[in-house]
Amino acid sequence: MSIPNSPLHKIGQAFLSAFTNLSASEHLALRADDCLHVFAPASVGITEAKTNAVFGSHVTSLGRVLAHFPVTAKEMFVNEAGRQVTIWATGVPEFREEAKGGDDDDDDDDGGGDWDYVGEYIFILDVDERGKIKRIIEFLDSKNTMVLLGMVRKARENVAAFAASDGK
Image (cartoon, rainbow, N blue to C red; front, side):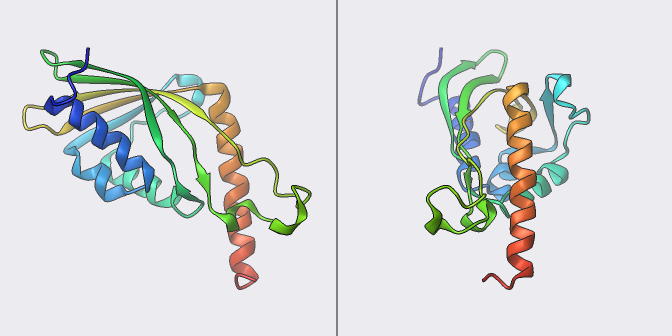
């Protein structure tokens, strides 16, 4: 059960909120210096845990193609004794217009593709006595994550093409 005014619940809410504007500094402010972000399941292919520096770069890089990535809790469970927060959530990336490619005047025939996506996630946050997250385990919907990775790859190509054309 989650008590909305508990410090751990507030940490969970702040963690989700940091995704909205893809703020590396908001994410890192919540983490212990030695925090590790682990992705699961192994079938996703992300085998190394991300340090704060690596995760910060990852978020900044995503910000080049995504305007926002609001992540909303479906359920949040707080284990006060274990200093752990478990969050079942959905995330909806909002791609930047230049990342979508094509001309918006063409009623979906612009070659830009479908940019709608809803991902499902489970986060387990281990929190130290100072209120800093010391470990994050992020379970991804492995099938849909592959779709999202393809979308991000295409968005990066579109942004590069947009920049090469001087933004015109």
